[in-house]
Structures are given as structure tokens and as C-alpha cells.
Image (cartoon, rainbow over all chains, first blue to last red; front, side, top):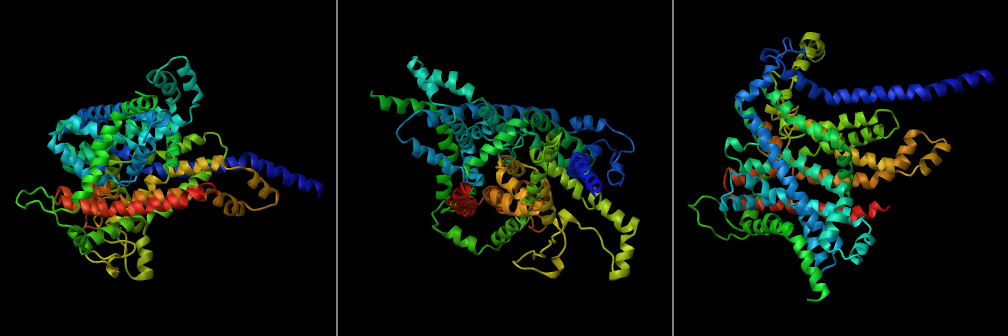
Length: 285
Length: 328
């Protein structure tokens, strides 16, 4: 009897050590592959000759890396890359700058009307973007900023959410630090740049990554503002590429692969901040 | 200048760059759009600008398109419970201590981080009824493997794969030009295709990470106590983990609902043009077409405000009940 129990016990420990781990890996791996299937098809299709697209065999019969070069010949794809990166970089820089200055005023300085103005900021967070889209568009028309970089960058550079996020972050920095600096004769500008900003760095990076990704993929506003081809960003460029060359699925897929690659690279490097940002973002509810 | 006034001045100086943009591009437009929803504001010069009171809103009540597109928007939310359940399952699987778990997390997260126009174009190719791999696979099973022979023997008819994005059918059989359900509209169509794509995109995204964060922070005392008492894993999940996750689930549900109300714009613009026969038109896409194709800016503002008020109500429900739950 006792040997039987021992055997069962051994089997259970074997199961605990190896069986559970292996079955978990199998299941997670299976789910991962299922999730990745559309991506895998996209990459393979981008190397196919057009005749292969409708075949059931997912592997190209002949590999055509020149599909990627063909995309650059058909449309100004390099221009789309530049525009997307340029606009996203400017919006990110301006958003982080204006948001952190405003967050400092909300989190670190006592002033009359502060809570009222902050409530106003919070209230606009729940207004759907489509409400302000029409007035903003008419403002751009009257300022002659349609079809311009300024029209694409400036309206996107003020974020109530960014201000909120950084304020929450700055509130967690001990106020004894500013008080000590104040006694040492530092002014508010020095306190901001020498104490608050370095300590708020994780928050700043989080906001920067989110703003960058959001604007890199931005669609609604650029769709309204962009009229000329030289201003097209990747999403807008891809939309028209698909409209004009939609039947050439292999080329369209090459374009799609190239549009998502920068996002994947950024994601792999900034995962930590993204995860934190999503969890911080949930606090607003 | 006394100290308090100086502090206020300093604060306003820091606030100013953001506040000016906030007023010009956010707060100002909100008020402007509300005012304009009571006018016949349009871009045609032939019609003189006029205050028309509540006329936009009464017109909207009788606008069958508004209600059809409202129904579409609601229909798209069918995917939400599935996406949330999926996020929870993935989060539970990721919360085990396992070597290489972050690799899986990265892979699950990829669809949501790369989401956007490029992926919608990808799905449009996947759903293509003639050349797309989904129907190629279905046809292979039905005709090459011979599933259709079996179906024919049993039901006396054969099956053809759905036309996906060019089909007006739906799993609820929604009628095309009026509110209701009709037999010939039952099936899989454009709306279902977009719902499925949405689940694929969203399942491993932010919601999964929120669940994962909650699960990692879950106090283990109760779980361990239940384990010692010999409770099954399902019993522990149902009675300990699920109630513990309730605030997270509530938050995710509300946010998905708010997102759903504003959703469908990119899908309609990139994948379907709102078609076939308006079946993928949602509220936001309707506002966009009314404003920028029909140039009915006043009417579009009115529709936008109806949407905004619905979202406001949902947000208030969240504030009223959500916070209480959070400290439960």
C-alpha cells in the first residue's frame, strides 16, 4: 500500500514539475500561433507573385522580395514614412512639454481656481472626439491651415489626458523635496526641471510612447486635413494605395508589413512603459 | 503683489501653453458644436444661416437612417462580452509563473498595438470572398475534402462560404432598410466579419493587461485558505477571484461600451465605405458623412451631441457605481 502511495506521489510531483509546464507552454503556444496567423499570412503574401494569392498553399511558389521595391515605385512610400514619423515626433514633443508644464501647475502649486480648472479638464475627457472634429475643421479652414504640417501637428499637441496622467504621476513625488529646494533658494522653474522632471521620467516616457504610437496611427484628423499627396501619412497613404492598387494584394501586403514594423520595434523596446501606462490610464475611471 | 497672487500668476504661466490649446481645440469647440446643433449650419452658400431651435433633433428622431446606424452601432457591441471573456482567459493563463511568459504576452499584445489602417487592409484581403485565404480554406474543406457531400446527403443542399464584407446578412438576420429581422438576412455578413476582427484585435490588448495587473496584485491569503479547504480551481475562481476582479470587469465593460458607441469609423472608411447597403454605417461614420459629404454641419453636430449625451450618461453611471466597487 505504502509503495503504491509513494508511486502516486512521485507521479504527482513529476506532473507538477514537468507536465503542468509543458501543457501550459503547449496551450499558450497554440493560442499565440492562432493569434499570429493573420500576420504570418500577411508577411508570406507580401513575398508572393500575384497568382499565388488565392492558392491554398500559404508559402510563395517563387519568393518576390522585389514586391517591396515595387511599393516605393508605385507610391511615395518613403514620403509617407517621413511624414508619419515627423508629425508623430513633433506632436509627441509638444504634448509632453505642454502637458508637463500644466501638470506641474496642477500638482505642485497652490492657486485659486485650481480645482475648478482641473475639473474642466476632466470633463472634456469624456467628450467624444467626433464632437470637436467639425469645429476644429472649420477653424483650420479659416486659419488657412488645411493641407499643412502645422494643421496636422498643432491641434494634436494639447492633451487633457496627458496633463491628467502626468499630474497623477507628479502627485506621487514627495513634496518635502520641493520644500527643501525652496528653502535652498530654488525658484519654481528650477524645482520643475531639477527635481520634478527627473523623478517624473517614467511618466514622461509613458506619455511620450503613447502619444507617439497614437499619432503614428492617427487616421481621423489627417483624413480631414490632408489633401495633397506629399503630406500623406502612412495610414492615409495606405488608404489611397489600397483604393488605387487594391487588386494587387501582394503589394498592398508589402505596404502593410512596412507600416507595422516601426510600431513593433517601438513596442519591443518600450513594453515596460506601455504596460504601466495602460494601468495608470485605468485610474482615471 | 502678495504671495498668493504671485503663486496664481506663476501657475497660470505654466498652465498657459496647454490651456490656450485646450480652449482653442477642445473646450471652445465643445461649446461651439453645441450651439451649432441648434442651427442649419451648412457649407452651401445658397441656404442662409438660421437658428432652427430643436429642429435638428426632431428631424433625427424621424430619420430612419439614424436609427438603423444606431442599431448597427449596438450590434457591433455583441463582440464586447466575448472580447472581455477572452481577455480574462488570456490574463489568467499569463498570470502563471512560467519561463518566457513575457514572450507570450508580447505576441498576444501585437494585434492591438499594431491595430489601425494597415491591419484593416490586411483583414479586407483575408475576407475577400474570391481570393482571400478564409474562403479558400472554407472552399477546400467544403469541396476538396468533401464536406459538402455529407451536407448534401443530410440536408439535400450544399453550402457556399459567406461573402463577408460584401454581404448584408448577419447572425441576427437584421433587415436592411428598416428595423427588424427577416429570415433571408440570417447568415454571416460584413458586420459579423468586423466584429470578429475586433475581437481578434482587442482580446490581447489593454483589457488583458488590466486583468493581468489585477491578478498579479490579488492577495493570496484567501486563495491559499480555499486551497487548504480543498476547493476546486473552478470554485476558487468563481468565489474568490471573480468577485475580486469585479471592479476591473466593471471598468473594462464601461470603457468597451464607450469605445463601442464611438466605434466603427475606421472600419467603415477603410474596409466597406459603410456598405453594403449601409449595414456597416455606425454613428461616428454617419456624423462624418453628414458633415463632410452632405455638408450638413448643423445636423451632424446634433447627431454628435446625441452620441455625447449617451456617453455622458454611461460615464456618470461609471462614476456613481464604479468607485464604490473599486474599494470593495
